[in-house]
Length: 154
Length: 472
Image 1 (cartoon, rainbow over the protein chains, first blue to last red):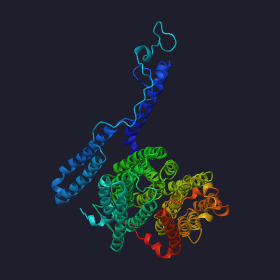
Image 2: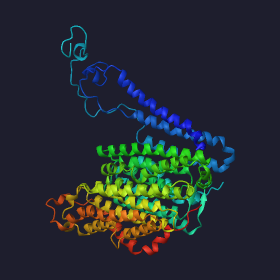
Image 3: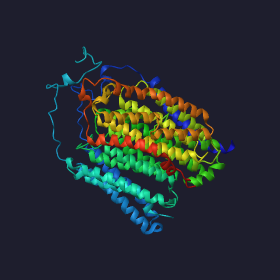
Image 4: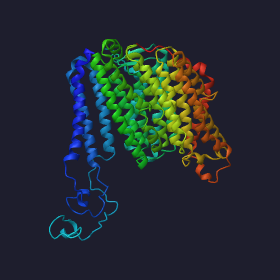
């Protein structure tokens, strides 16, 4: 199959991609020192002993802002090729792109009606319970391997 | 360049109604959202009228040949719009005054438009755009109620859809690269001299994406989870309408885009059909939850439908058998889901004990729909199965027909596991489990069950509507 020769680079690229991903995992497993401790396994809080589960009530305003960005991003992506062939498409192209822009704008209106731009302070439904009222460096930072450390918290 | 927006009137009706509904959903008070439901139903009825007018006219290709208005597209419009109406009917009560009720109808309209566009698309890139239009709203529909199971189902559905979408796009890229065009007639000509292995790779990848849409093996994993986790209306939607689009697209892709005899796609589809129906039917045996059982039952049905695709182009029977079976399957499956929507508290098979004592009419509808799914005369799927088996035997796949008959007999077992307790057992000690969901769901169940029988009795009149040559 001589005509398949031109596909060899694509095939090689696929093989290379899989090999790189696979080798990275294997290499990391083989080379990295693995001495897990409780502190290393814990989710990050910059070395501070977590006192309560992270609140799941993240404000999702940011996602809506990102959505607004994507809406207009996509509109612009379509406007560029349209602008290039605008003269060939004449009135049909103009009407078409206006309809498209109107449809895109509707999604923006929908987001606003759902409060995407209401950036007032978030109403707290119930106070966040803090487990530990007394947080000092001695109680919240766990020292590992330092001289004088006894047990888990020095 | 030939632009004729009027030719796309049914699709445009859906999209315009969806856009208007999206704007309205933001400003309508929660109790007034029925206005969007009315708008959605109106768009479907308007689309059906426009389709009837289009059926009178000659077939044509519009928008630079990227979209074909031919008997297959018109059949898809009728089945999809009818199915959307039934889904709107059975979702009236479960979703009433829900904060996202309007959005449900908006997404439903968009996904329906995508399903129709999948069938009409006569161009690989249009097919992929339609795939996205049919898929993305469906992910939203499954997770719309924002409960835990729904979100999980939605994420599974989305991740699998993204994976198969990428595979499909890769296949389309290879085929477009080989043929230097994306339109089906151009591809058919150009692929004749292209390397066989590359054509096979592209065809298999595109098939994989379409198999995801219809829930066929090996892309069936999302079906049970999505159906079980989603609300009943969303489950009824994703087990019916995307399948219509995916099967119609597969039929057109195999017969119009691939040159005859270049790759043996028929064998691939036949083996897929055999695996799909066997897996669906045998996995349904052990199910105790009704929605999961219906999910596996739809996988089994997709196996039968794929049989018609396997013999596409070999004889004239395959196409009319496919569209008749799709119409029959749609109405029968939706009748079963309407019964499930009418009994929102009954989740397992044992909850249906003694249904015939409490609600004889509803139990009758359930019996008609489940026995219809087996293929008992005089329901529509009996004629549908007869048509498909004939087409398959004429097409030279006798082994597939034999396997399908064995599967049909086996499937009787799990449908009866549901029906027998409903009819023979004493009335349930907890009648609350069989409390009614509302009049709209019940009416939809009765209407759909009646339609199953009417479609079966009147098969002779309906069958030719799915026939007629596809545009080259």
